[in-house]
Image (cartoon, rainbow, N blue to C red; front, top):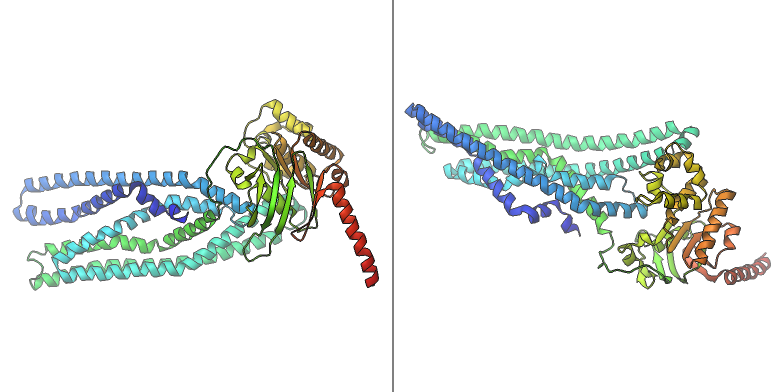
Amino acid sequence: MSQILNPIAFVWRTCGVSLFTLSLLNAIFMLAPTVFMLEVYGRAVTSRSDSTLLYLSVAVIVVYIAWGFFDWLRSKLLFDVANLFKSYYEAQHLRAHFLASYREESTGPGLLADSRLLGTALNSPLLVNLIDLPFTILFFIIIYYLNPLLGLTVLFFGVVIISLASLAGSRSSPHLGKAGQLLRLATRRFQEVMRAGRFVTSSGMEKSLALDWLKQHKAHINSQAEASDIAGGASAVSKFLQTFSGSLLLGLGCWLTLIGELGQDGSAMIFASVLGARALMPMAAITTGAKQISEWKAAYHRVSVAVDKLPAETPKMPLGKPTGRLVFENVAFQFQPKQAPVLQGVTGVIEPGDLVTVLGRSGSGKSTLLRLASGFLKPVSGVVRLDGADMQQWLDNGLGEHLGYVPQAPEPLPLGIGAYVGRGEILSLDALENALDGVGIKGVVSQLPDGVETPTDWCFNHFSGGQVNRLALARAIHNNPFVLLLDEPDAALDKTGMQALTDILAKRKQSGLITIMVTHRQELLTLTTKLLVLDEGRLRAFGGTAEVVERLKAAVQKRSPEQGRGT
């Protein structure tokens, strides 16, 4: 997975030969100014011929035009490849971002920013210098051919500058990694505070939260500054070495000319000095961009780690519309390898028409069970099946059309109410009104100035908690999904909302659809056909409602006398 994400490998596979050819031509054309200078001094000046100067000028202009054209062609090629890379992989990166958010892992907007950074890296000037770097060997060979001492001098400065770039990159990487982590944390905190804006204001917490954010932001700036200091120092030394090497080559060339080791007219020493400076130019640029290269490497690492966590692609096969059981087969799950399992040993069969209520104390794994049933969390062992097929297969075969889910804390989306209820699609007015009316919120929406076009983030900030839950419920049930997962849907519901929820649950039972619900409301428990009881992640009881209730009563009665004897 990580290999196909490598931008450099992607460039090589898509346009490696063309890019190599254009870069080689660019390296050859780069000799044009120096050759022109030598020809002017060697032919036009010595012969004092106007026609020779004219011919040389016309020739070099043609070369410059060709040079500019091929350089533009290379830039356009890299730009197109960068766009192709972004279009090809950003969807995968977005999927990884969704998965990390679903697993409650912190990525913030950083993962998508890393994805864009890798895309823009492919047509940056720094990458062009990296591509030109191997062709400096051509310049070394020419200078060495003129005189071995000059060639070895250029090679020495080249090795020193590249070593300096490598050192700067390795020294700045930890600071950049820390800065990126602090930025993602600060951004996530800021977004959370903005979502709770009214509560923060009414509670008088603005100052303390602002100071906390400023503290994290300042730590991020300090880490960035440390990395910049390292990169800036390396860049300054690199520029000094590049400038000094030019003068040193000129001095050595003059001395070699005086002793008869480098021609007689002095043109070779000028040629070697200019060519040496051009050979070191990409290396100096790479040293200056050492910080940027470190940022690319860090972004590549973060994206690779996130994408490697994606479930393996499974061959897509049409599964049709589900009509059968939802089965948990010895399911276990943990968020991190070293953490204790959140769920373990969960086994049970849910038939069409069942309304299952999940009970358990806080932290017993009820919400995680619903996420596993949604298919987006994959068990570390065991399997969840719908209609005989693994939920992971359903996930890649249109599961969203057959599943509705209302989490404990519904989140807004950058959509209007109509598109939110339609899950991104524009519903017909009748279908939208039916969905809103089914949860008893049609009247509230109709009174809004923008009606169904009202943004959901505005609704989530101005609606009551019960109205927000009813809006999320409308989204979950609008297409009458075969499986409906409800995580405390009754929270903050008034009498009207409870009646609407009760009607929905009763209709689903009659229609032979599956519903799994986390609730503690007595009036909702009377509707259930089965109870699933969790205790510290383990399945304590599962079966028909009456059967499980009797078992729990018997367990309580058995425990009570034992406790009495203990006292």
